[in-house]
Amino acid sequence: MLRILLIVCTLLMATFAVAEGHQCSTKLKDDIIITKQHIQVKGASGNLQITPDGGVRLNDKVIPLTAKQRLQAIDYQTEVRKELPWIRQNTEQKLAEAKQILDKLVVRVMGQDSQVRNRLNVLKQNLNKQIDKVIEQRADSLIFHHQRLKTLEADSRILLNESLGGILQDSINEMGRRQLLTGNDANQSLQNLLGGLSGLQQDLELEWKKQEDNFRQFGQQVCRKIAHMEQLRIDLLNKLK
Image (cartoon, rainbow, N blue to C red; front, side, top):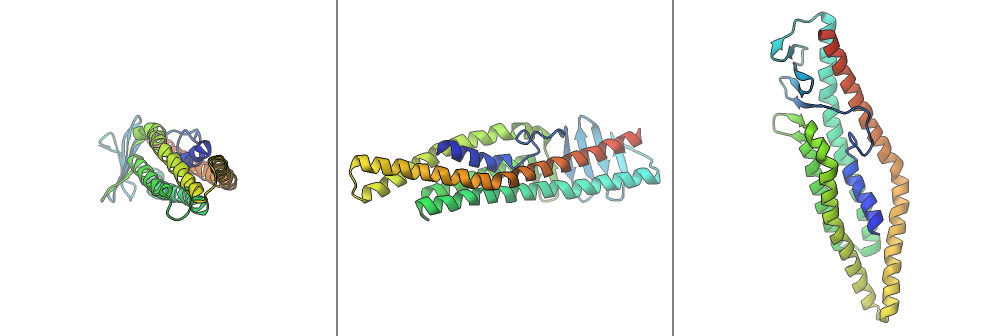
């Protein structure tokens, strides 16, 4: 059971697929800041600012633009404004879907009052906080922190490991209490307990197989969006040289 819970719970973290989990070929190496006034891309490639009407500052210098260059700048900043919020929103949605898969199985096998459901809620909330560390929503801006992406998987695995011990213990305790209430002898209760855990594991495996392609396709979609944004940025900078 622990192995399958780890696989499915890891899905809660791995849905942020800009990353190692889906091995995107394109890696963002800059922070990206979105405000009403401009987008800003700063890091390894310098400091680029683009206003909604296509005005460009590069390394604090105003860049004179041709009409074609201005259109390229507008296209890039429009794409960034669209895709980063999309990635954040849909990652959170996939996270909720993965948690719901687990929750339904827990309710079916262990009941509405299972403490495992509370642990899953806490885990989901903590993983949402991890997402917010990478794509941070502020009152007046949205910020992508590229350095934090490097620690996302490791930090999320720590959260998972901390949660899984409690989830497993609660599962054993709750199923054990249920078996004791049946009045069976100790050997029979143990066999029933192990059978219950095995049944839950099988249910999780079946559900994971149903959902795996869906989540992987989402990861690939995120990678394509990241690659497209980055190519637009590279093309624009090349034209500005």
